[in-house]
Length: 153
Image (cartoon, rainbow, N blue to C red; front, side, top):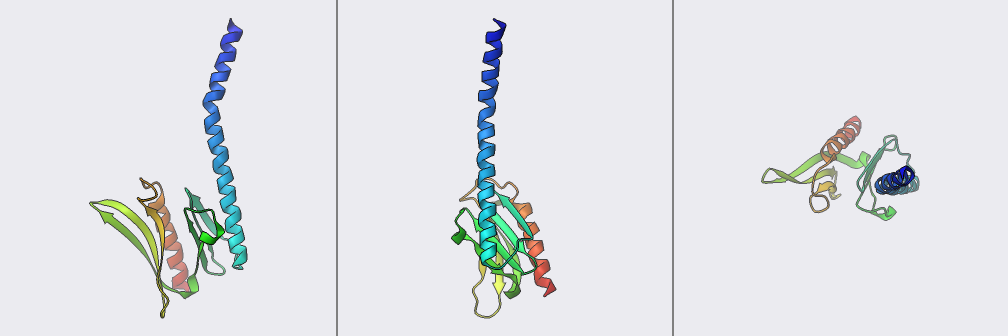
């Protein structure tokens, strides 16, 4: 009788833990794919990543030596990366779109000199995620990093 209860207990514990294990394994695989894709994109642009951040499906990275910012939002495809030459950027602005005191979008806007159009990188949009997790801290961090590089030139 005790053996039967022990076996049932072990099976129930294993069944309870299995979904968490599988989810963790899937997330590690997705992160590894994102890291490999980022490395390939950086290599194609003659860059070496100095600092990077991965969360949800967003990837932000910087090559401080070459002054390039790499950004991908909601796609593991290498062609979805936006590469910004920070040497050409005149100003970086943090844009926060609010409606009824609720944040709808968080974006970084890059203003270039001359006739070059501005670029906007979307860190958060309620169209893709319902709640803000760490996007506010992250966008502030990357705004500070980019601004420091722009101010050095």
